[in-house]
Image (cartoon, rainbow, N blue to C red; front, side, top):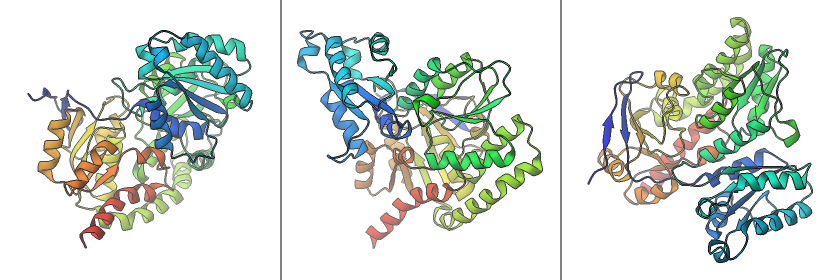
Length: 424
């Protein structure tokens, strides 16, 4: 029996469908891979099974001699059977961890499917341990894969940070907050552009260190750097912050629109904006030109996985000339993606949710030139002769901003080049 498919009324000129059924996604624990690199004095302790530990280790590709800032407190048979006191076990593991790693200033207890199954209350554990381990701050969030996508791990982590942030002074001048984990080099590039526009008070969430997390208040204006931060945005707005509607900073067009939203909010003159962004726009367009030759007219199919699908589809269609067969996305946040939806080609089929078998059938029937999907679908599709791009790679790689536009395009060109070499 096929899962129900609901055809929605037109939304900004796109052909919107909703599906329900079997899904194929990673769990939110995967977000630790890029978050532990970002917050330099934080540690992520997953409270989960050996399977959770293997997942994180495999995704991170950490060598045996490395000392990463994540680990797993293993829930074994004694914990599941209720023979051991899970809270005592957790306290023992955390105490030993802090003794061994005194450089840790912020500890995240990350829930998993197993910890949720045994109803382990990590929020109470975090409060208890924060009192005992001060000045180390202990927070918790869920990285469980139950009814979530893998990028929601970052959303849950940042949302957990917000209540603990300092309150901005009410009389302070408006400040700009960039929300979403970005590579340090990308942050530095954006800071230089904002400074050239005359916007000096720019902060980032998450910050690079626990003691430099931004203050939040009614004078905070924020830009989302990632489209999957719905819970974080809600938490910020409860603290009085205001979102600046914008496309996302992928490619030259998206980056310009994203920066323009800040410029308009802070009263930057058009001439100043043009001077600040012109060099980056020129470099990005130059970098994209050779990739456009390879991607123009190529038919692309997106499976729902990361929630980056709509901005990526806009980038491929408008800046590289690709044809969009279908744009699947786990969730479609109408408000956060409004600017992106307006930029999609008229009539683009966007599918929210997933019925895996049905989408696989549509993909096989369409035989696209490139399929963007999760790791679990890539091998079967490659075996059927379809070129694929792992969507998770787009989270591990710096892709935002003008300087990374060419690198982003290259990620989509690479599988086509590989397929051409194999065919020869």
